[in-house]
Amino acid sequence: MPLLIGTSGWSYDEWVGPFYGDERGMLRRYVEVFPTVEVNSTFYRYPTSRLVRGWYRAAPPGFVYAVKLPRVITHEKWLRLREGVEEDLERFLDLLRPLAEKLGPILIQLRPKFSYERHLEELEKFLGILPDNYEWAVEFRHPSWMRSETWRLLRSHGVAYTIVDEPLLPSEVEVTADFAYIRWHGHGRRIWYDYEYSEGELWSWVPKVREAERKTEKVYGYFNNHFSANAVKNAVEMLKLLGEATPEQLRALKRIEEFRQRVLRPVGMRPLETYGEGLSVADLLLRFTTTSRLMRAEGMDEREVEVVRADRGYVEARVRGYTIEIDAEGRVIRHDCDDWRKGVAERRMCKHLARLFLSLQEELAKGLLERIWEERDEWRFEAL
Image (cartoon, rainbow, N blue to C red; front, top):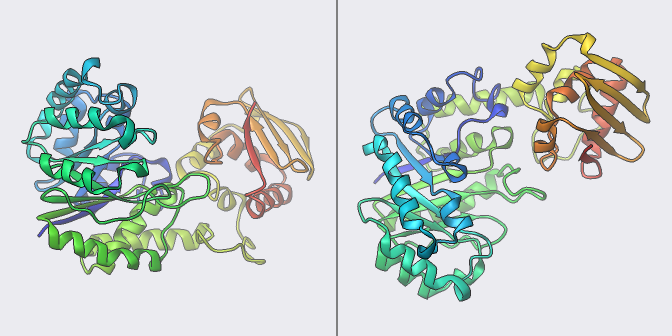
């Protein structure tokens, strides 16, 4: 009985170091470790035929791609047939044809406001147009769907209920198709998937996975907590607890653990009084940025950094024409590059911030980075 566990996505800069050797050939490295992956990018945009053919060529026989349905269908048109979603669906399936036998479930992830009371009719009609030669799974985000009527509807169409671990819904093992689909999102405070599962939390899922195995022909499972390569780590740890981890997966886990021992504070532990002693500025920066961003920062010319003011209370600088303000008293960092804006919610530092800290006097840089880390729940990252 197949048990296929992997991660949601594979192309993350912050996996360079703990999981990947460099940025090149991420997918080819990924498929050496895991038997399946959930493709996130299809949610945001339709893939090109060339890209899909590339996915096919990169994976060995037996590898399975699960893919997310485009958000134009689920989030922009709310599954409404009158808005042309049947044509949108046909276009998407046509683009996926090159995957052929490597295509697994197609995930229909619904909006959090898509509720049973208001949108049941749209879901019923949409399920009615799904071709039955594909595997389909629905992920609900609204608690109103947690009822027996939902399970009967999904079973009547052979569509899997997506079993989730997240803050919005209970982790109920409902099996409504001949396969089960599980997604581990995490329980992060600011972002769900900025989270690392503990061994105890993973152990609590072992009987649930076994239950799903008993009730279905195969089980797909994906960890969506991609920050700091937590998804890779937790996926292998889950397989290890299930007695299914391969030697290659265990080697990947060991690499992540060794990487963290060298440069990172273990996620989820309280900061230690002595942690950070002997670490370089670059080591400390890896708490806030990715290896690839740090490498790009180190490659920048020192002459591109102009420090206007620098002391323990306030730093103002310009890096490649961009402005950076670090207000230690107000516990806020302000910056204006696009990469910074994208990472504000995740409190991730871009290459310009990394370059600035590398350029500051070492004692000042380390002191600020230690303070930001220890007071991280109080600091704000803002866009200028």
